[in-house]
Length: 100
Image (cartoon, rainbow, N blue to C red):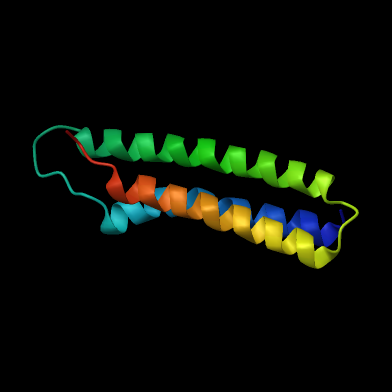
């Protein structure tokens, strides 16, 4: 695992982390009633983003250790697939979160 691999993984984590709350604020379900329910939902989406980003970082580092003898292209594809899976999960969580 070279410096490029580590930097790539470090740069993907903030993008993944920010995607859930930003998508919720931009395109998510709004709340028109009284109270602080919109903030509560945003906090839940924020916590879900933290958990997903942590899981992504752990899985991508484990995959890097398991694939350290493979070519850089294979490691890049595995990182990209994991990133896209977690990005979709985070986007779905941010877009579908609503107050009930």
